[in-house]
Length: 330
Image 1 (spheres, rainbow, N blue to C red):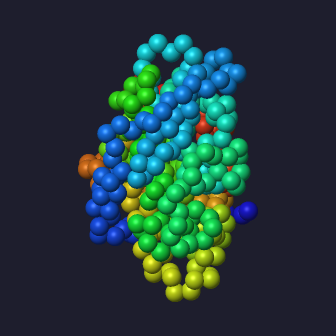
Image 2 (cartoon, rainbow, N blue to C red):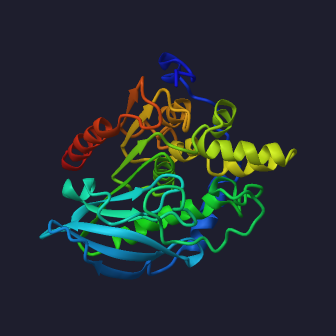
């Protein structure tokens, strides 16, 4: 795929006006208040994985509406002191998979919580284990369009709430230094990490690559790939639903969450990404932390001119590892 979005110099200046409803903060404050539970953890069960250098637990925590949400929690075997925890969110259509699939963060010496996606997990990967009992509002079959006509019914209201609750759950787990919490993710996971950064004021750091749900209106004009294509297909059938859909999407716009973030952030994007166009990542990056006062939190962006949605792959991960180590040890 050739480059199709703005040229890099324009991306570096790309700061669109926020597509943000007046009650954005009240909406999320009320949503999270409704989800608040005094005890986030439901169960923490050890799992035999065959890995001798990693200990893993099957975790269930209370998410949106108190619904049980599954996750894998891992620690380096023999860890003797509380560790910083990386709370990781996975991509669209993927579940938490199997516990041995994602070992980078625990091998780097961190505690690691990998959250399952409610109502997803059937498109690729190794599946998930968290149903979405509230997926009954009108909308298409894909998560991106479930409940699209109302912000209160929308799938991402529930999933973002789960993501915030995952941080609360991670901080309650044994072996975790609750004062050093990192949100991380690629694609949909990157969008969730950004949302968490905007809703949890005391994160230590945020790692975001190719984020979904950023610059949503522009993305719908640029691409028919992936989740944005599902939204466009829904609106091609339900003509006249655009206003309601755009209103709903404005409550999950990643740029709005990014504006409220306070933690240092590491971004990455492929400039030929047709799934999550790079202008969305740059819109979030360029407005990141602007409501936090002063110069805002430390942040950096890595662009990969000849890559698509895969971005920098292992090179990006290496950069994240070095950046996060410096952040936590500095």
